[in-house]
Image (cartoon, rainbow, N blue to C red):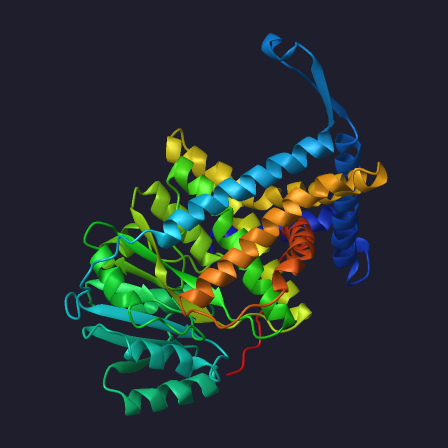
Amino acid sequence: MVPDSPLHRLQSLRNRTALFDIDSLAPPGADTWFSRLAAGVLASAVLVFGFAQGSMTIVFALPELLGAASVAFLQAEFALVNFTVFLLVSTAALAVQLFRRDLPSDPPRTGPDVTAIVPVYRDAAVLDRSVESLLATEYDDLRVVVVCEPDDEASIDRATALEARHDRVECLVNTDNPGSKAAAVNYAASVTESEHVAVFDADEVVDPAFVPTAVAGLRDADVVQGRTVPEPDGVVETAAYYESVVLGELTDRLVSLVTGFRLAASHAVVMRRSAFETAGGYDPDMLTEDYDFAFRCYEAGLSVREQFAHPSRVTAARTPRDWWGQRKRWLTGYAQVLHRRLGALEASRRSVFALAICAGSVLGNLLILSMAAKVAVLVAVDAAAWVAPPLAALAVVGIAARWYDARAGHLEGFDLGWALTPAVLVCYSLVGIVATVEYVTTWDGEWYSVDKTG
């Protein structure tokens, strides 16, 4: 933790105030049980409130042309109809983006130098995926810089071997400010001089056409963000794939159309060096450095273009424990970014939009769990048929996405994993509630690392 950083000051404040908290008198581990109890109480309250709200009756008065009659609905029915409409409209917007062909007809093979930064920590087993795919890219002026942590001997050995084998690969050890992906990327950017900077994950298989089309996109944009596709090669991995479609791609469409906000992440991204510097690089204090970086790009007025035609393939969490731990880290990070956005709020349209978008990513988990309670209302009153439209919409989304990725050659075959999406959404909302409560009550900077194998 960087001294005098916002996170350091927050933790110092927590440590000082703990002297006056009743928790400080409890045995070790009591704070963890307290946060779990608080999360359970909040989740239960959301379910009770959602059930009570869903049981209310809404009366709509029809116009005189239709007889001036009135129609009554349960609020649960109305909520599920709205959710279905949201899914379908968002799907249409995503489909337009996926099938829109605004790519250059002849992407450049040469041009401005690009430094592809690959931060690695305990991912030696999968590092070849990223490096080899980047070396196979259809862009000649690309240099791959692998950034290792000083205590990760396995990754250093693997990166050094790749450096010896390939002229365009360089291994760096982050001795400047080790301990985070953000600091590793910042370090590599500070010791290189290319016009463009790109960032990729160690397990990311980059499409050969992505970098050249991204470089072409930077002619009239500051950042080009690609798409990542989790490889659905197991039950948990398959669930992660459909989750990424619904929560990672679908829900952002309408927000993007209304506000102009687009995610600029720390993977599958190519940007002008000037844009990276304008945004201030990635913040090592932030658990989800890419989410924070995206908002700083947005508030700085940088233009971000999404390029979904040539996605990267990434490995997904392979066990329920890894899935839970990884999402908990992400969602704790979202709460941390929301905390920062509250403190940085200014009287500007983009600052207000940024706060609203970030709040939605945190508080939206309450809405998802509340929706589950509304489903229970409809089952209780023998109106379960109203549950069919949103379930059908989720099925259409999943099947269409898998059809598109299979047709485009990004993945192979089809499966029934889309049927897991409703359960995954509920589990995700529970993770979000636990993560947010723990951030407010007990979080001390720890984070979860997923084990990956080649």
